[in-house]
Length: 392
Image 1 (spheres, rainbow, N blue to C red):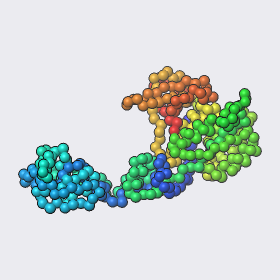
Image 2: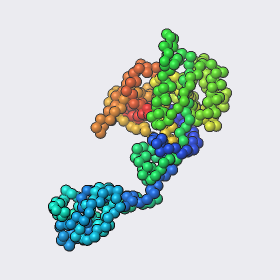
Image 3: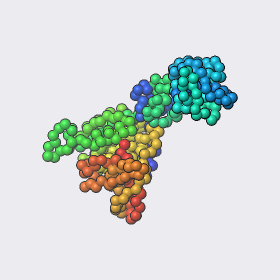
Image 4: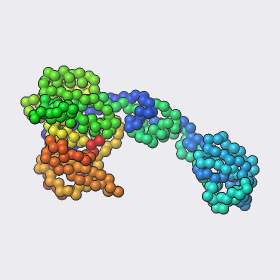
């Protein structure tokens, strides 16, 4: 069997040709930009006032003048007024364009106004105070957000500020999440003594939503012909298929054979890890297929370690895995890499991490509060630092 690092390298060699699409700005949150956002004007577009106060010409202060006749008041959103005399000033509001003939703003906190005269009590020490000069942030045509960035609230605001009602974004992959197994029933049903509800599909769909991907789902029975028919159709319609169950060594673990019959090339089957050892990975001409073991902890461990990092790469997003410290005593396996569920939380500047003990790969009930998995390499070691793979 291959190691997790070898599996990761093989998976990362598979690439999707997603292309791009134009969508409304209102729908663009968490998508990935497929175009640079360029300033359509200098920023700021005018000499912008940064404080409420009075605007004046600094040479009057240099000449010794400390009291100024208030000529007028200019509000934000009004066209600029023109200063008629160096002995005058204009009351002016934050966000407005600086009045013509003025080059300095003295805030109200530094002046006293009596009978229409503004008396300066704290003298500005340089010309240009409290004025944000036109083009001092960006020039027209400068890049404000780069192609390949994930679109967050800041990018939405930038796009709106340059008049972009729609954006070119990287197309999300069409993903199908499938559960397999005759023992599974729908969540609204009451299972019989020999049945359980479908849960892996919903956990996987939620993990995908964490990186912005919506997915379809399907349940497939342990029947070769029905599997073959359903997957034949799915391979023509989806970019990525995630299967849960049906890849171990049991007589009804039919997926590897069915996928082979459908022309999906196996890249590997089996990783030297626990849980998730039987994982299968392959691809056809246009579809990448992950067949994950059906035990719930195995499914989520493989999703966190392989599926989500690969999808982030395809979308041009940065990797989320990191190295964290664990204070709990961790006993490595002699030959297998272990994936141990943990709860990692940020407390002040330190990451607090708790190992979640469970009774094996089928113990879904112990995962409440889990944020991801740590990777524990085989062999004796005493390290307290481990690679951490978040689930989402």
